Length: 339
Image (cartoon, rainbow, N blue to C red):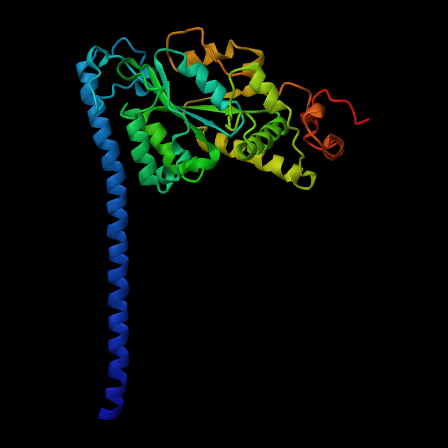
């Protein structure tokens, strides 16, 4: 039989364990409630948008649309204006997933030359818009509801609306949530990459140099509209860090491969800059993909780097030696060996 002294020593220990157990249970309960609220908020947003779209579809005759296209034909009701007579004109949603200096800006100018297409640029270059998934969804909702204000907006009679999204601007970080958003809202993915990643690297280095030096009368221009401006910018020959060359090329290659892997379950098309340059009928394929009327699309942008790589890289001999015999040897194109 234990003494009163022993009992008094045991009781505080048991009391502490009971309190700790209750606190743990309470903490787990709070976490569960928070997770449920977050999940409910996300799905509530989806359901609210979906019901709005369905309500609009009931007002419009969508029987003429092929059944397989109905998920991708939308009838937005902007908060900031009325679509008027275009309310029942279906709108397709798209996102161009690309990497800097891969021809996405040039490609976007072609799309925006179509009088029914609004591609709103690199919206997520602003960090606050991608600081968390809620901000990402909020921004996408504004774009696809036709409430995003930009110089590209065609407003009432848009037939396709979207944005340009660089892979280092949060799209890969939140890829699981964004893929589900794309699939739920019927957003089509346009991949645009560059096959020759060495040429892309030259363009990146040259653009970074001009950002600092501002060669065109003290103004930095990532894209130009005259041959004279292009020739000025093309005079700079960057020096490539050959120590990091292979690893840098692999990082870019892996980033593009991951994007395709993550978003392959969405409706998508894969384009390459080199194919668009050599075959402009690819632009017709894009218009068919977006189910918009075919038009002759134009761009005022002028290509900057047109010379052989050997004439555009300061330390070409070193670059050639590093890539010769590697998996990236094809990036040397038709260049001969260094003399």
